[in-house]
Length: 295
Image (cartoon, rainbow, N blue to C red; front, side, top):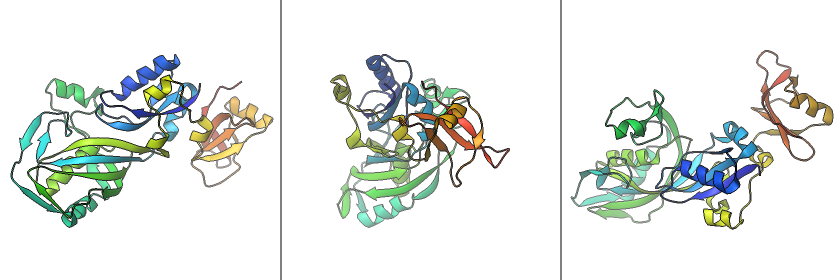
């Protein structure tokens, strides 16, 4: 039982809760997830099981795609619907579709984000939410994120009312906080804002319609993504027995191709046996990054 389980994460569970439940279902301690989702967020949560935990470092930086519902008129302590309301603007608001799209487009590209206090970002070994629980303010590390696409999904030509809600689709880099984006959008529009709802519809190459619920999994209604298939984004090379022996022993080997980031070596059974990169000390050699124990 080695591979990636594509879980359709339910509400009211942390990503860690999901990992623990998968551990119990599959009777293994070797389980890890890709890309943390907050308890109120649903959608694609890839979970690596057994030997697949060894490839997390190679696939965790993939882009993510979301559908978010943004609510104009109230801001909260957590930047989403789960927090305490801290500011309210009840006056009637009018926002044109043209103006809203202009604001959304202003976020395309590299942006500097400050993660919310209620988040799992670590400062001095502790997660920010641990400081927040004790009402301790700490300086939050700024991070560079990238928004590749932000699309308005709501069709109204004019948004009007005391509270205005609209949906957007976001394609972004790893580590982006969509609730922070919602707040930043509100600031540019001039109103207190929070993220009302969020669904991750894609993580790397995996989308929501490939995912399984816990109910599916308990009924045996699921498939795992193999380690071989998960690493197809890199250069793949099949090995003979001689080269396989060298790789399994962690030896440096002769470079055979150019233009690569990583090279994934596999045997005739499509079993991944090693991941290699350029040897920085010798342009003609490759050095191992990860070797897999296979029979």
